[in-house]
Image 1: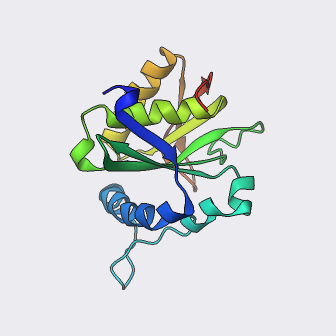
Image 2: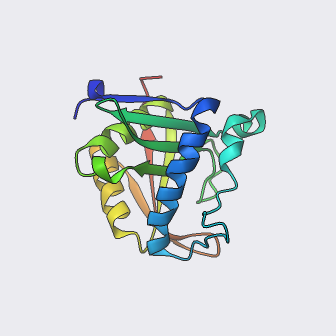
Length: 175
């Protein structure tokens, strides 16, 4: 899939309900890799989502994106500036990233990820849960291709995170 075949854009406030719906599918997928409690209402909670459309969220480096393949909704990405490695300088982090199953394995996720990386020049962190082997393989491949192998993978196991964190530099270029 080429970049021209994917529409990747900043999610507006009108897109928030769509991302909230996709978030349920995403969290359902994640629940296979760890305990993600479901509420009595049958919904998974994600308390940070509303912050992506506030001034405070923007000040924290939060940015929501939505993407479409062949004109169909294909997924979302949430970026923030939270460092799992407690780095002191500015960092971009993939907070959440989701591709609908219909579009997995077709290159949509890779194109969306590279588009996201290009929007924010500088240091990046991408983290995956230890048990989420498919996500770890996906991100190693995508980031490895994007950086031509210039990435560092950290194995982190502490109270806040248990899994991999890849770090790399994005040259940016497509705001």
